[in-house]
Image (cartoon, rainbow, N blue to C red; front, side, top):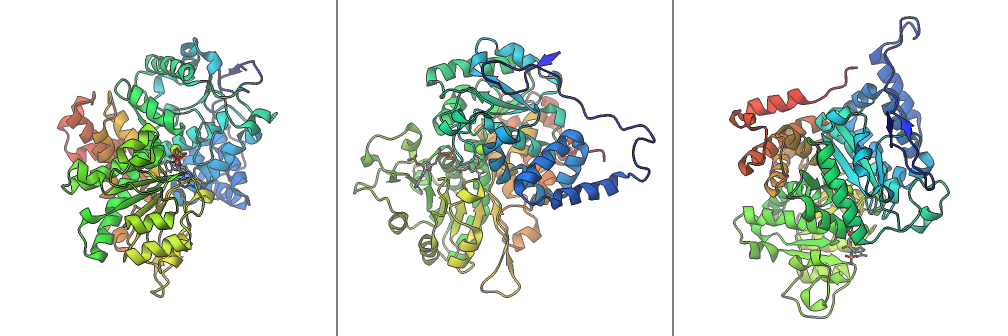
Length: 548
Ligand SMILES: NC(=O)C1=CN([C@@H]2O[C@H](COP(=O)(O)OP(=O)(O)OC[C@H]3O[C@@H](n4cnc5c(N)ncnc54)[C@H](OP(=O)(O)O)[C@@H]3O)[C@@H](O)[C@H]2O)C=CC1
Ligand SMILES: CC(=O)C(=O)O
Ligand SMILES: [Mg+2]
């Protein structure tokens, strides 16, 4: 059997034999006499920790996954807080940027625009055809906040799927990383002799849509049990292909829906604390979005349900949300604007454009400031102080990834709000001392869709859904919000500790299955009669665990 698992070299498609399986345990006498899995885990972790840069650690773990997958996931599960910043944001961002330099072996499928008209046989050559359950598909056009990385975006599909396995116990053999190669508009890559993708600009929209139609149809034919996660498509395409396929195939867009769900969840917990401190009702929250792309608008759409769940009408909910883009406050009288911004564009402002964030804050008087702008340090000291002067507990979520593009750091947020901030960021930051209470530690939340997609995907797979409905996405969010333990609430955490990711994914998956049942999109109808505890037990029982 041959399989297209490698990127392209010039015009040719390199065909490789199937990727080698991990070797069976060596016969007695071929390993050192005292080799023991538990001690070897310590040895491997020590080797990992001896690497000095994030990228070296990433490469080490990537090779470990290839050579000893069970050990990789065992260590990952036991050291989630230490491993996620390496296999995921921020280090995965650097790995993607340098993908053409660090590439070593096939680990997913690359489907090129040159394969148009013959995508089906390529998909059929995937070695674990019948096992395929979840695919993360990117076209590399907006990887984290790093822009168009072309086929270098493969690293993000692989990273997300590692979190499906570690975080939700999806079987490793059921995951299918895919990177679509539709060209790149990044000149640096086109000129890089090591670049692994097609060496031309991105193809026009019509050609891409024809390609996508063929690809999606071929995916459904080849993998009838597959759920698709669209990842890191540039904003126009993210909205376009979500709308085009969401009622036809089981899929969701992680940046629009996964991010919306994770932020709604953290916001629900933050808003309770903020309203307790201000004495104002939850409905008085005023949310300012700095960034109005797929993530900003996706989150804004999801936060509508924060208000409607409190009894506000759709119109009232919409009035509690303001968007800012690179031209400043988004308002109708500004003139022509992208389709996805229109719904939240303000109708009640007719003045001249307001572009400075401090002026916008003065005008809106937000209780919450959410950053999805890819603009590092946009929440500077003046912005943080302004938020703190308006609110006893300001909600500040700098959600852009990776770390170096975050709108502010946790230490700055703590410093300039005198420790009152309710904080969540897209990438992790270290904890801080409370400036006002000796010996008290303040913990940053990680408002990253990694808390949602593993459980959402697992629930959708177990329920064998025909579609992913908005109600399933909302249920994943509420499941996450309610999964905080008493201890976590006492520490004012907005998200559960990442070490509990498996438990959280089980809760999220259960809520997703229940919502799928309500919407009647579940094909595993035998689950409908189970009690909640039976369902959670079933979900946990289905989770794959490393055997070492
Ligand atoms: N925490 C999480 O789980 C997630 C985080 N993200 C992060 O969100 C970020 C945005 O992603 P996405 O929405 O897809 O990206 P886009 O590029 O589509 O959106 C960026 C938005 O920010 C606006 N913007 C850019 N520069 C400025 C500026 N100087 N001032 C004000 N606004 C500005 C853009 O304005 P304009 O529209 O005018 O161009 C656009 O609206 C990324 O960094 C990504 O990593 C994404 C998904 C999940
Ligand atoms: C987290 C994520 O999906 C992003 O930054 O794009
Ligand atoms: Mg993403």
